[in-house]
Image (cartoon, rainbow, N blue to C red; front, side, top):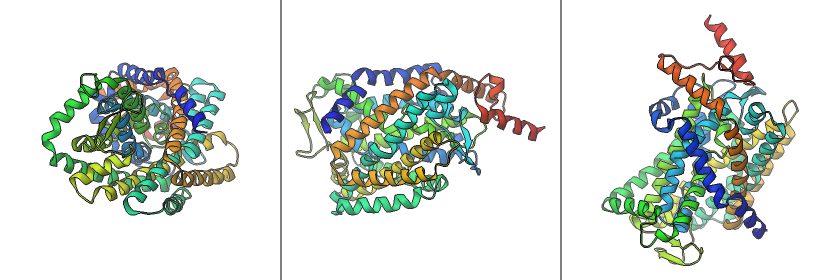
Length: 485
């Protein structure tokens, strides 16, 4: 099993694929004239505008759902793994993919808004919807929906629950079976309450966990502020093969930085668009900009917090290109993952690290599993349109809860490998789709900018812009126009 999964990962995450991810993000950054810089003010302001409705959630709730998916175990365990396998230089490449990936996040999330539908009284959207409506290839849309359903309900929840269980066992000696059971019970109470309950929990839990985590990181950075120039220099020199110790593994730095960066911030992966489509906004580009900023929050803020704690304290190990030879051994005998972050916090705040990281992991990973369920449910809804899918949705909940428990009590290596397979499948399919479909998103951005320039609050008219098959906006625009007149 592990051998097969490893081979599949070798194909899905081969070196050319990693560079394609970077190239697509760079292409969209250029085509949007680096909106991630030009519209930074709008990104922040739009987060707090808009209200929820019977059919949709507010921009902030949609952001929170997306962030609950983005901010997960990848921010703690994934960042540590990137440093272990690629050295400090991997952190730079995580930053690079976040900055460039914001362009991809804008495009995919704007497309999700353009082609969203009102289904069973709720807004639904995502890659499956925009592939069918925008590209017109039904089998391609179904393939993505099936891949996302498999990844979100079976392959990826185990990564999150595994990290929670190991963190609780290391910090408090809690048996993994007990932790797994508690996770399943709490998760069940939320997901059986539907999308609105997921959004409500996310909007309170996500800001609390992110701000609390970064505050501790700032305290540790402040205690070691004299190390700041050296750490920044080490990150950049290692990223460009200029460091005597880590320069020889620049290939690993790029590969692991990009892979773990994409895993963490999910730009271009096709997960963020599901939450973006649920937002109640007057123009698709508004939520596209909000979702672009969520990539910054995830990687530039939360991942950087983890990286700085680890690098400032020297609590990490790094292996060579062969994956075996140790070139830096700051924590002899310690496996890459949450243990790096626990040791880093403990070195600055003795006795606090294990418990703090375990609790952080619980919040980060638990909310991510919530987001996974939302994405899985959306793709189930796509596949079951015009049919009674209540039984299958109930089965989906049980399957996801089972996968969550299984991941909590089994080996971490297999959980991460399976998660990489799920992520790889979605990345491949979604990147192809957004490359084909970029034009409507670019048209929407241009329209948004033109209306803003006129001092208007942008409202979307798909017919006027020549965007076909955006049925929701055609109907909604007519209704808005009638109300105004």
